[in-house]
Structures are given as C-alpha cells and as structure tokens.
Length: 238
Image (tube, rainbow, N blue to C red; front, side, top):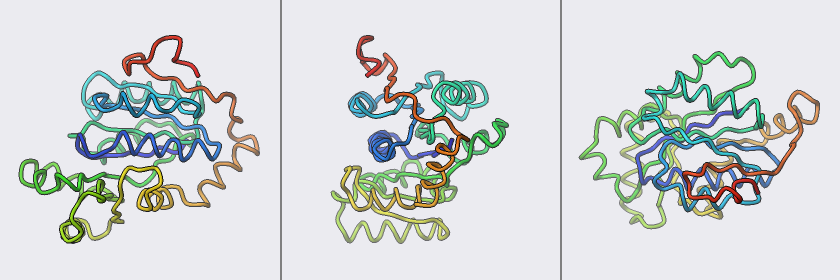
C-alpha cells in the first residue's frame, strides 16, 4: 500500500481534498483507505463516499504524532489485513509536523507492504497571512519540511496576493513543488496535484502488481465509515 500524508492547519481543506483524492483513485479501480484525525469538518465530506471503494478509520486519542506508534500502526495493519488497499491517505492533526508522521511510519517496520509518497501540505490561501503572523513557527516548519505545497482556495484569493504568497513560500522551501488549487473535483490545480502524487508509472505498477497476484484483487466496493461521522448503522456498509 502506498501511503500519502496530507498536512495543513485546520480549515485548509484537507478533508475535502482527501475525499476528492479518494474518489479520483477509486474511480480508476483502486482500493483507497482514509485515516482521519480531525473529524470536525469530516461529516459532510466523508459521508459522500457512498459507492466508492473507500474505508475509513478514525484516530481519536489525541494528536496523531503523539499516538502514532500505537494507534496508527494498529490502524494501518488492521486496514491492510482487512482491505489491503492500494492507497492509504493519512490526515495528521493541524499542529502535527508531517515529517514526524512519516518518520514514525518508517519506524513501524511494515516491510515491503508499504511505501510513502512525498509529503503534501495544504496552505489556506485565504488565511495565509494570519497563519504566518499567529503561528509562524508551526506554519514555517510545515512549509520547510514538505515536498509538495498546495495553496488551496486559490479561486477566492486575489491573483496579485496569490503570486506574492507563492514567492514567499518558494523562499522558505525552494526545493518543493508549489501548486495552486481549489478543492473542487474538476479544478485544474487539483488534477495537477494528482499527476504529481500519482504519476502514470505508479498507477500502472500498482495495477500490474494486483493483476499479477502480488496484491489481492478488489474483493468489495464497500465503504466503511465510523459511526462518529453521523452515519446510521444500517448505512455503514454500502
């Protein structure tokens, strides 16, 4: 399974992006799992996954990087053993450093069953200046440690301001790939992010490994959603 870490502060659009990302991959025939840490904005998005081969596991016992060695490993191994997904998309808490999440994932010793994608951090284009003023240390560290930086909500940001934000972010992390996007499923920036994260050769290799028997074929198109998301028991399996 290929693990994707989506960082960013609360309100940056992580959950919406994860849901759209899951739909993008599931519509191509891949099994996708979501591991959500911040459930506050998840209700509307995750429950829209009906009909897609996506399962979710909620992490509830605090900051993901603090409980990672226990709960995240349990979640990952449980999801792997039950669904054996092609892709797992992980949402750390807003104040978690994504590089710490990746470092702990690498220490879990899950062997060849897991690879980790470049770290993605979503930046709220509307609140970028406020974040840099109020949470500069955290915001700067997340930017510096990420490999892909996506300025979200770009459709509602003044183009001049957006250009200035890109320049500022580029100065903090000149090695990163910087994108502008909105969380809309048909947004060009969103598809650019998909192309960077899931290049054709990765998708082909993943599909080929399943066909050749190194990963099981899709056994179900069920979506399993935690009851804490407001889903009735009878609606938990679609």
